Length: 299
Image (cartoon, rainbow, N blue to C red):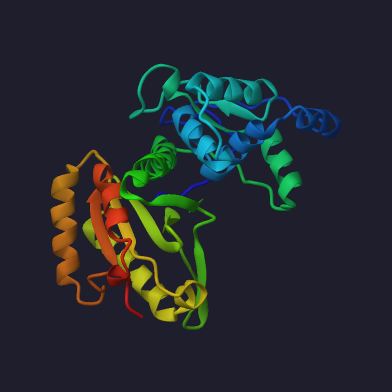
């Protein structure tokens, strides 16, 4: 995972540009809110949950959230343009590495006004802290969105649907460990369904930026949390961890998968059924293949 928070964006040393829209008054914000339709609100909420979101991701997830007939991607871009003109979201002024060129590569994040409006809607009192994001952090947020798009569009072919999801920090789990509180920080938590059966999964996005020993420590943290029994008491079973390998700067996903799988086999503290390693292309098939009671992590 990548630490950091999105927010008030300034130009950073690694090239992520910034924007700081003029402050919008409370009365003006009320007027803006009255102009928002259902799709506007859905897209704004998705940007909030993902922190940085590509227009293509918003198109897929907004349609899935509304369970409505899919409009064109151009319609989604018009929605993003409307929210931008109203001062609720703002685009990164340049394309971020890894995205396709053209309008499909548009990436947006909330403005201060957008955050204020969402806090009013949801009764949140804590203001999102704005800091300078690195290119790596922005890409991490986009990878989470990409994983959700893959699951949303790919699972129905297996007779499975994505029914809900939490991106970090909503996916984080606080629990008691010894005499102190610990926080498990999954990149993503998803629930999928086949008929009336529902399965949960933690998803970790990996671009090879962390060493194998570091990843093993992250997986050991899942095992520590599993042993508390909190998740099992709440949901009946502990969600398997799916590590999705994306192309990175150091090692190809196939090589990284072999290295990580070998390290996990050597680690006797992490149950074999707890962690499943795949590349991004295999994410959907892996999750669908785990939708079987026999694959559940035992208490």
